[in-house]
Image (cartoon, rainbow, N blue to C red; front, top):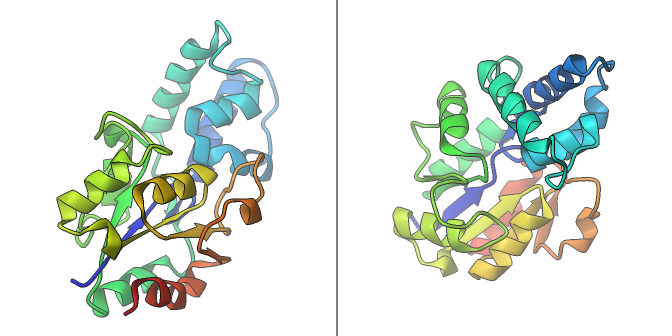
Length: 221
């Protein structure tokens, strides 16, 4: 294997927003509120419970009721997190191309292990994934570089032979701090606060099908 391509998970490899959004709407239902359209909830999905509770109930971690709602959200999500989740268009072909060309790929996500691992397995990604680093694998989560550095070490690659792909500004910040080039997945959730063109990624992909030429150029393969 000549290089390691690391991916964020939610909003980059997997479209998890339908199941995350359903869990968010369950919180609104519990509060006697009507459901929000998925298009409204989708941009907040990369931020997990924090982002979705902000959108669904206007709650932040500073609010007294936040932790109670966070735990209920996570319980509802865990109970139905593989109902409508699927790989983004072009991802299976991209991962196959990466492997065929002699590169390895892995996942670095802020999602905790007991939520991430079952979805990775359900989507059939566990067979070829070289490394899976979750939000509770290391002492820090993205945008700290430690998860990316840990993934490179576990897979046996120097950071100069790694790149990171993600759909949130924190992904690009983590890559830069880890000394890795980056690709912004503009087809993902991307968040409501920072336009993709301000992230300073090396490249921006508007679909997974756009990505292979960018990977080749950044990794010189």
